[in-house]
Image 1: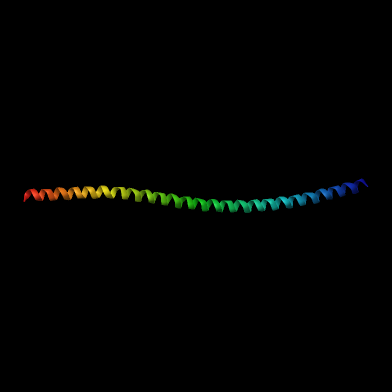
Image 2 (image 1 turned 90 degrees about the vertical axis):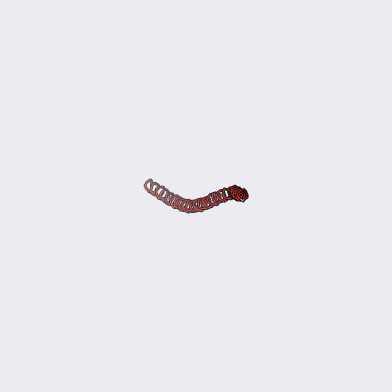
Length: 91
């Protein structure tokens, strides 16, 4: 009788362990799927961040170009003015 009870309890424990193992496997699979999704999202965010950084660098470069243009025009105008003044003095 005792052996039968022991066998029944053992069988119950084995069944419980198998059920628990299956639940753990299901949880692991769900976590792995979530991890994959988060990694993909992270990669997309990294790409977007690189695009933003690139756009900012391009904007700064363009701003610098625009700031240099008036200075170059002024210097060119001044050179032309000096040339014209020298021509006027020669005549």
